[in-house]
Image (tube, rainbow, N blue to C red; front, side, top):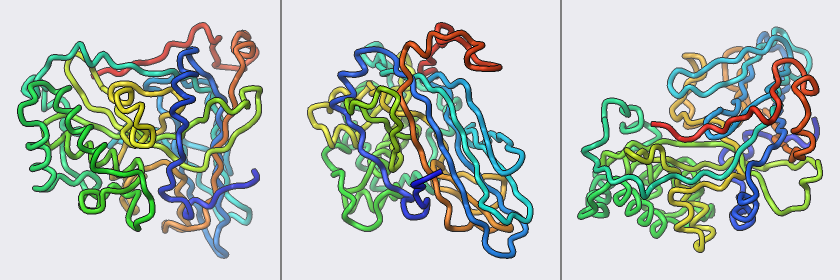
Length: 357
């Protein structure tokens, strides 16, 4: 495992998604990649036990198969109760060598287009009890008086959920700049976002989620890794990704969960309308949770996308990681299940999952 990136050096570094290239490639249909996500940590001298966690890709809006895990000992998959995110976990006793954990998988994904024009629902039509988790305030999504005032002002006179969400989308687009020059970016800190008006995808979409929830619109977080298009490496060459990307969704009766990617729209203003209700396929979804606790103890995590390590129960630095992928040619996907090994399926049986309430 070479050229690993120290996790603590890039805690909130969001990589650029090549949106313009993406739209053209998405028109060609689904895209399949083979991804590899690896982490390792050198235990401090005298350590009795090291634990290492690594998030796994989710299965909504993408097909995940041939998921294989490897590590320094028995690897367990746990599902976080707050978010249903899946996480691989390995524990090593009295380790004298680096503790490693890795996942490989085939992921097929394509562009999403939500039927926003089909929804005429009002906020009063939303079943609030069914979406309590996507409506509340939390340490990571702070709904204060200023957020409520902005939400009321921007949605005034807008009759439907979609119209109100679009008004909030437009406000965030105008208020925020994609700019990581001011310390404090990348945390989704609402007071920072409102005051500074700059940040990365975390800041854009946390602000949108807070405004939507303040209006009574369920909204949730999506986090993963971006993939580039148009780079001439669809011939099997591996590509590495330097950091995460995140986006958001809001719920509209009649349309389901509607994606928005405001930070990409801000970087590509010509695609502003596109990124309200549509989502380019050059990304892999990993997690949706915020304010997470991995095993009922330890500090609360703002979000989870990079590996986390503990030495004798205390979070430790020095974790290195690498996320890479390569495009899988269609000719490879036409092989039989036997060619892929136990538990695999031919490509023809893949079914992409679409947003559901």
